[in-house]
Image 1 (cartoon, rainbow, N blue to C red):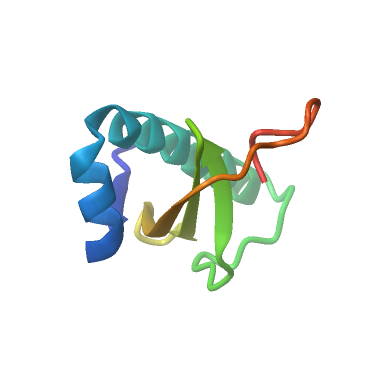
Image 2 (cartoon, helix red, strand yellow):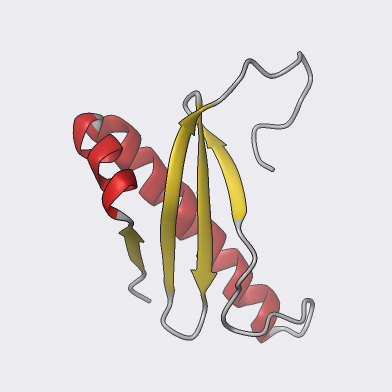
Length: 94
């Protein structure tokens, strides 16, 4: 399955300046899309297909805010911000 990762103009500017971050974000969001689709397919979670709820993931010192569109097999990065230091033992994914 081919997944599409899109970004708003503001997020694209940040990612263009940091190619290694872009690669890590694409890998993370692809994995999240795969998991969400599998959960929906197996009936383990009631995904509506288009998630209006903003989600976030911590990648390489940044918080990546995104939404999923399972019908289009895509994720859209809304914005990116520097993450505050996480307390020891905290999860990197939120």
